[in-house]
Image (cartoon, rainbow, N blue to C red; front, side, top):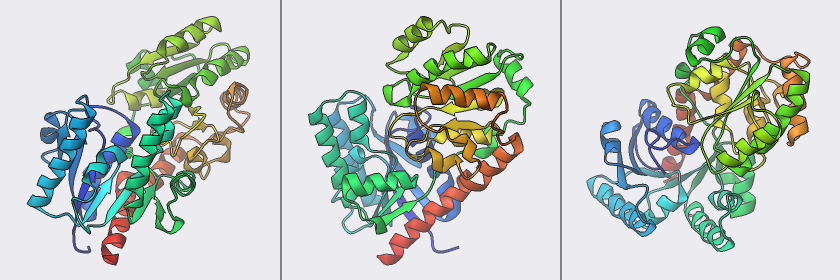
Length: 384
């Protein structure tokens, strides 16, 4: 193996304290990169327990609920302290806000940006002001333009970096998201998973896990179940997740008369999540905007459950090589509803359990993805 590289990884939160796609990928890399010859030290916003939970590899610079000024000031202070202990060979940032205070601290140490999504654009979708969008975009642009390489989850997000932030194509490398394949391959039968969760054995089960916010397409998914109900009266959808739309979605379910066909399960623990995927006949990602990869697609496939996706962002790139039939023709409740019906009735054959697992293992296992990330790091360090 090549000479080891020392990396400083600047994240957002630790996954054990706040669960999001960015945080899951960050955790996976922290745990997987050392086997690829990349030593890691990490900084996140979180509690004092982060240091203990990661055996000292990651430390929190401030609490995630501390004031913005406090978080930014302490992010810079901690980065200076880490530099004094040992100058890293490379600085990898996963969240622009917390990477910005570290600019200038590490001199000519090369930087790599892991671009998990356009932070400013996402804030606009969730209702932030134009001023907030402008400030966030300026922070992102500054951080991204100070990096030598940019790792994106899909070609779709590579295009966003080029068009929205002026990043040259030659600095962009596509590396997909990753999951712990073994954890999602539970070894349980579908019937056993349903028994453990208390899910009905005699109903077609559809599963969706999303934050309950507007861009996730959950309104369309609920409306789509009215179509599904007409063709498959016993079909049932479980939506897992928390968010600001909870009350509105419950009202929508009631207004459509779907109380017996759609369940909002709320927060699902990370331990139970593989069982929920395994218990389903089909999972679905109905996003309408700003989806760079869709980690839930890989989680579902790793559990042996096929997943339908809308043709948004990087979602088609994640599943189309397995089967074009997993990509719906468009967004909107009609396309989603008809797609679910066709899948459940076998009109469009879907890949079987083992094919789904084999595909996920070959492309998205943590070791394979960490190896690609390490290669990008070595490329940058070699140029230096």
